[in-house]
Image 1 (cartoon, rainbow, N blue to C red):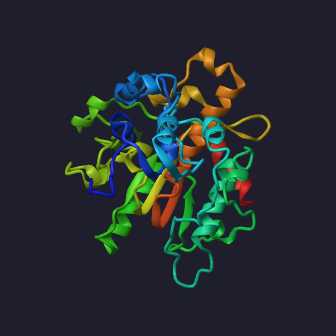
Image 2: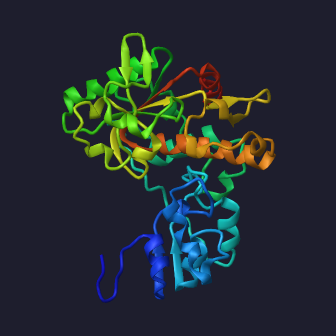
Amino acid sequence: MNSSNLTVSTAIKLINQKEHYDTIIVDESHRLSRRGSKQHSAFNTIYKHTEFANCENHLEPLITLSNQVILMYDILQAIRPANISREKFKELTTGFEKCYLTTQFRIQAPEGKDYSSEDYVNGIKYLLYKDTDLLQYTNFDLKFDRSLFHDTDPDAYFGYFNEAPLENLIDWVEEDKNYHPEHINRVLSGLVEEWKQAEGKNPSITHFHESMISRRWNSTQENWINSTDDDAEDQIGSVFAVQGIDLNKVGVLIGNDLLVDKNGKLYGEPSNFKNVNGKHTKAELLLPDTQKEFTIFVLNIYYVLLTRGIDGIRIAFWHNDAFKEYFKKTFDF
């Protein structure tokens, strides 16, 4: 969209046009691209311009193309190796004025409950990131109301299932649809089952299997929520299909790409992570910094999945008893 004073565009288009602006506002700037091969080739076209040939990411040229840059950034929502690194973003914004937004995620707490969206988001941050150094860069508050995670009422905002993860999550979101047919509910999962783009066109190919239940991944990453597939509501959503999307009730399968080490800390397990573009080579994974970066990507993926449900969320453990015990220990069950 363009007017005499306003342009709404993508980073790639703005950079390739090389037009100078008074102010550039970048929403979700944690998704800005870095230079490299783990992405669509179109993202690297900007480096063909002489003035941008030495740039390492899309943020650098955007800064040069504007008198003022405003960046909406969430350190916990970078979910691809192709995203600008935390270290580089911090370096490039050293002189920037920094302001913390209050939690944008809003939950519909059941009547009579005192907990809030801040309690939930802070609890999820604590669960996932307490053993990292990232919480200091967020508005995390350790004094969250833990009763939210212990609420066993059927209408509680949060809950979990010990067994039959797929069956229980499906039953839970479908039961809600019986009472609220207008709701958009989905079961989501970490990237722990193989998926190929071509398989999205074939509904007979399924990826999640439990007893007599078979489900496939989301058939598309573009506008999946409005998909016209006959089985659209039955498909299991990935983070790429729901990032930035609000749903009503959400079930999340936490898979064995997120495990617990001998010291009781969470780590990403590469052998169980099935996103081809998110994988690192064995040589890269020998480097401590790469191991840490990979773990953060996995944590961020689950953070995104766990903050999609406005009206309620249930989690279940997909071949992952280790995380089940970690979860219970963290919240003193």
